[in-house]
Image (cartoon, rainbow, N blue to C red):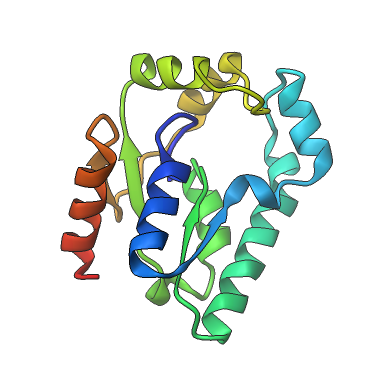
Length: 157
């Protein structure tokens, strides 16, 4: 988890590939209206996020029911969002928070092409961010290989 530009998708895909697990990107669970709203530079409201959070939760429940290990990259910036996503599943989940500076993430988001998440929305993500107390916190500025090494070491996977 983390704000835009934290490296969630990059790290998630690489980790899933190393483990031969399924990878899912939280962006793929957004309703089309949410994507369009963000593309136009408008921050999502909690009401906008609700169906997204429910879809992510359903995907997690499905994977658990099929005993299918997976890596999911998604922002889930507020404790309330994490509670919705984790409801009834928390003993099966491990949370990694890719933490970094506005400056670093601004640079990364500025270089993206063809992504709906606009640079001007980064500030709104930092504004609502509630850092998790129960996550593995990793410096997002580290090289991807080091981040993955730390995740695997901490979770013994």
